[in-house]
Amino acid sequence: MVTLAIGALTGMPIEQTAHGAQHGAGGMRFVRIGDAPAGDETPAAADIKQIVVDNFSFTPATAAVPVGTTVTWTNHDDIPHNVVSPEQKFKSPVLDTDEMFSHKFEAAGTYKYYCSIHPRMTGQVVVR
Ligand code: CU
Image (cartoon, rainbow, N blue to C red; front, side, top):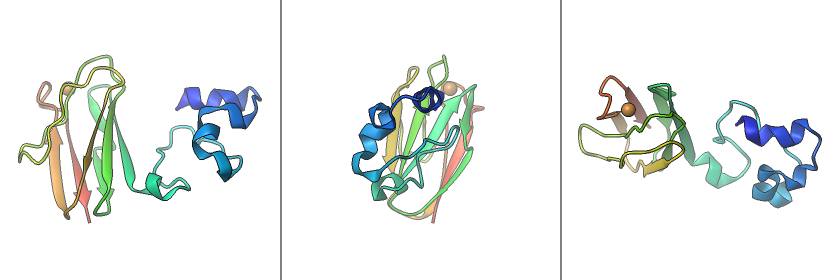
């Protein structure tokens, strides 16, 4: 998040920053520091929910999303983690630093998950 904002803060032309490239015709737009891309102007972004894995925790621990949302976990920790549904609805490989895993939730329900390497790391996705 912080690296994306550096260009704007140092006065570089916005079109040459990463988000300028992604949103081309959308005009100038600042990335909100610490905010998730969900709710951005493109329809695709609204269907993606980002969960950050860092400091031995999932953030947000409870992610509420509409049916059809693709949830993406990104490991920002220095430690490998994974994302495992105890009901075997989904299971990621072991994610090293900066690796990602995505799962699309097609049905309403509450999907608990945890890191099988560190089982005290838990979270849930609530699909409505
Ligand atoms: Cu872990």
